[in-house]
Figure 1: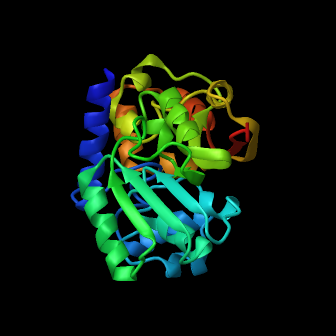
Figure 2: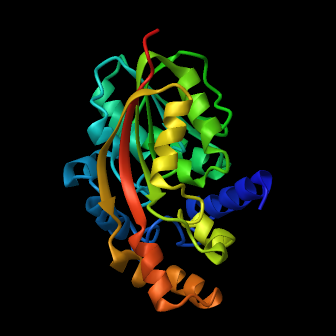
Length: 278
């Protein structure tokens, strides 16, 4: 798939999720995007607390993440925070609580339906310091050196041009600004069948980079003090028991052994980096 086709497919799929027309997303379709309880169950598994989930408006948690970047971002009162691929707004709303009324949160998403949903949620929750902008994370609608912190949750792996995403992230951060992201990476390459699968791409698998290459790209664009704060194996049962995963395996005629090898190579990582002050 070329870059434009990839973005179109991802946008269409996430538009359906925002409109509740299907239940397919990152991780397990059995656990997310169905009901609030199911989405919350998945979110608790990846690092959100009961308290945090109660702080956000109903409908803002779609169970699409692979971590909780806000919990590790050490946000300060008055800071400006940018969320790449903000979805229905859960991480923006949690960040807004941390930065206070004098802080500002900007959520960017390329799916109009997600932007509409996020704006509705902001209005419901009366979040006056949160703004949502339609745009692509490879070409951010954000001024140079204007934000203190960039967060993202299981979104960069969906981009067909990850280096451009990190270049844009570097551009919009102030000198000394911080990057804190949760994402999906791989320990080994994927079989060609899976690489070429649209379903596997949208499911945050076939678009993922090798872990070492991912860190290398972050370094190449200029970030320093790059650290993997946490790296966890994605539970096999989330995939093995997932009907969407089973369909991919059956359609692509992948053996159970090969499927387990692929699942075992998937990692959820939390990465921190700093833009140099000079």
